[in-house]
Length: 287
Figure 1 (cartoon, rainbow, N blue to C red):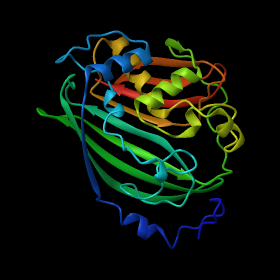
Figure 2 (cartoon, rainbow, N blue to C red):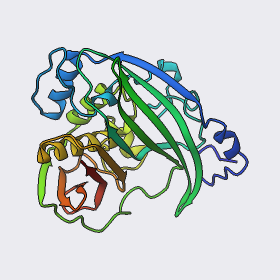
Figure 3 (cartoon, helix red, strand yellow):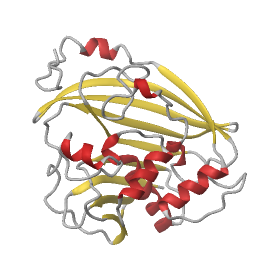
């Protein structure tokens, strides 16, 4: 069984219980308001029509239908306590490992957006420094006209004390197209607020350095994916049909973030990195 600190975990007796969550569903709805679109654009430094009926910014749905967990049900890391819709994996650290988006059509500002989520799989693996539990969740994002996009979300749970950095290539190469994103606590805090994400690693500097041992605040995976999708759409002049990504190593507020892109035979490869650092998120976009 798992020790209280999440180390030395042996989930052999528990994995079948966790797999009992496979097939569980959750449906939540929320209005995509002009005010949300305005705050989203302000956070990302973008401009655009935010009137009712206008095309909504890409991946703004990640700011909608997030669980509003009461304060007394929040864990010490700021995440909701284990259990509920997601399985109660007894490993203390949870991260966005990757996923994919398929864009069917644009969401519109001023509509009611519904997210239907389903637990697709729960898998236990042994990493180089301890157990890893992967939970795959499928999301259907729709409005009154039907499904607008589908999403696969890969969540990884792991023990404390596992290696967090330096696992990617020594130095990421430079893309044919690059864009520098100035990283600071304000950007990370505002995105946490937009997504109602209480995870303290993104805004609580004393916690993330003293309790979790990181060198600085961690740049959100969903924010990296959002920046890369917008970068791809801006470069190509149209929204991709599909976007896939993997998180390989963390980014911190200790340096700027560089978005990279290069054209491939079947679309575009994109990645994030800090200057002189490894690839943080690796992605592909296809049209």
